[in-house]
Length: 393
Image 1 (tube, rainbow, N blue to C red):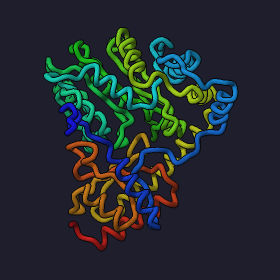
Image 2: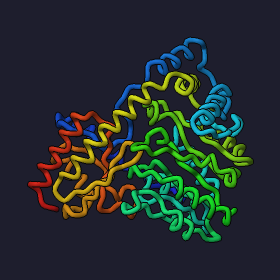
Image 3: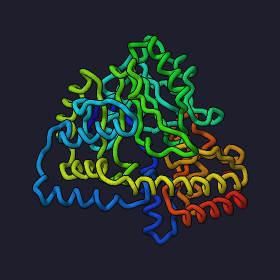
């Protein structure tokens, strides 16, 4: 009988993909399914980006590249961060990655081991906790509370740090809540972290372009006191509708860069060559399609929030970023995962139950508004009919 090493039993997964698979199966059976579960833009990758990839292939860029990524793309990332935030990042700190998850994996692997603590947001992206547990480290949830606008509290976060803490993960704009942590709170967090030089940070900024109501993204790159222990996760998937291209980047400080390079050599060798040339076109080319996409998400956000608040037993705070709402469904009488399952099977609406994002997710659902307004309105109508006619199981 084959036996794997014990720590593989600790690996979790991302239930959004399980819901996507079930929704796809039901659709293949002829069911009309509206998917508000998966976290990917419903827009096409802008044409000039696609053409850049095609040109790269035709020009012969179909071999290996450096494990850290081609230099012109690393330079484009550096220039983009300077233009958008005035953040000074050397191209030699930038590493091109096959999506966002490898950065999480590497960062958590570097600091996680039995006997240490890693802090992560809860509710938060499920892979954070999955990888922490895989390494044998103790996962310490940082509460993300509705009453705080789904922003993290600097005071509450800092109070969780102990001599065993090795890594703090933060995410703003946030998945699954759509929360955006204001600058004043980030200022407090950074000031407090100056007293804890043994704690590294990973800031997941993948939704940095997607803020609303005058909110502005605050990058941790602009805090010099923590730059020597700061890892940034970002990429192209959300901003440029490039989820399937598997193209991301990380900023690694000091000696961590070479550790990440070695891991890249062992894990994936390098990132798809033509996709990297597409990444250059995305950053250096026109941003009109990004602006249009974010504006459309903003319009849909209004439809979603208004519609959810009209449902029986449901209330929804207005998200300030990303393309998710995180409605409170506790007054419906349903447990969140049971409600999500029944809505998919019986009403043809795919959503994700809050507990899939952490212990504190009970009583909530993640609703992605990365779908058409027409489909969102149809889904809301189905949800209303279901909640009006079905009592909690």
